Image (tube, rainbow, N blue to C red):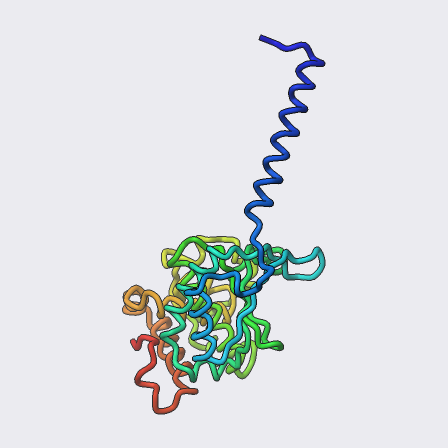
Length: 268
């Protein structure tokens, strides 16, 4: 049956208005109320952050309002239930770290964000070395990926604070002959396959590691902290990757002195 055009238009407009109302109302209902700040979080999550901050000298901030239109960093509003889940994973991973690692990074604040965008690309986090801030994306549902991201971004903070130069000539000398890094992490971050072990090549734990020396080190650290046996399998027939493993262990052991033997970073 076909309705007369005026009636059809009226009915269509009415349904559109009703639909729009419910969409707006649903968004209003789902929008988190951060008026109480960190107190919005459940007691367990608050206690976890308090203990983590006390142990490693960190403060925590939540991006509770959407970013403006300007600048290179954009984000949405953090959702408490997602943050609670992420904090649980963060605590489990960072509780394995010795204090000497945090002292080396000089990190002061961790900033939780949702749908974090840097230079028009979705990212899992980034380091603001000048302010000693670490931004972390909280909406990642893939637990394994989120745990790797926590280690990956921490490795960037460690690298930024302890490396002698941006090019890291000592590190790049460990690469296969005639290899040249790509255009940086942002050039590969939109390719999810690049961060999987299946994308590994000679000298590199993943395809994403080939983007820059910084991503190479961060990727290797993240995989060593979460799946060392997989890295061991790759390194068994790859002398370049094996040499990088040894070098990375030496670098993370340097600030820790006599406690080096107790570090959680797997030895080859």
